[in-house]
Image 1 (cartoon, helix red, strand yellow):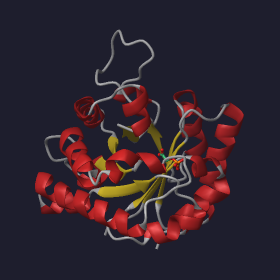
Image 2 (cartoon, rainbow, N blue to C red):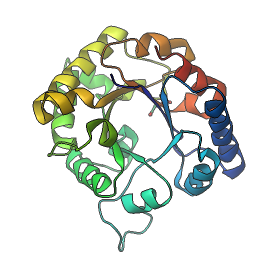
Image 3 (cartoon, rainbow, N blue to C red):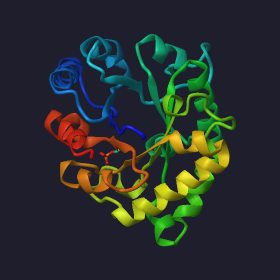
Image 4 (tube, protein in one colour):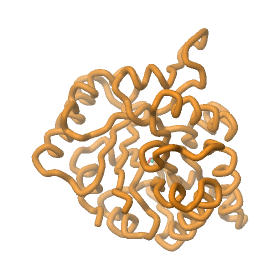
Length: 253
Ligand code: PGA
């Protein structure tokens, strides 16, 4: 049984006071009311260490939003997976569509970053998803399949549930208020599950969590979290409001 993971991607939002308060309030709620799911927050890099302190002992996990492939070196502005681990992270989001689009990240680069995450002992959350044009052209599954085949680690993750997560985020649903229908989500997640089993074998492929992301909010979370092979959510905008993020977690069956 895969426990659901509700991951908050804060993106480039939050200054110290607000970010620490948001994380601390979530931690307080988790301590008071043991939730039915795992919560993860991925704040911008300048907040990692203070958020790590704010959530200590609460069960809320911490993640980065990207990492470099190298351990260290002359890479101005980048952070290594080892640095994220050193800051208290257990996870890192990789290949988000905003990184693929804004920074030209290819699937093969994402695969190298996933290897770096594994090297540092982090769980990679590898994002895939089609654009609106690709969906309109009937190419959604084909695009997602090639992203999965080219972005995920070549070798099977060791402790599957603990070391790899896939997030399906249709690009047209991110930050737009539009969401994929439960039947489209079921089709895509089922396809990703088949690919994971083909790539890593039945036990590992069945244990990896597949998140849905793209305008998840309290009003649509319950129907999305009830879809087969949806093992949680990657939440952007709604993760910045405690009540909304908590309500999404509470909607997990
Ligand atoms: P959104 O973002 O929830 O604001 O659509 C999701 C994401 O990009 O991870």
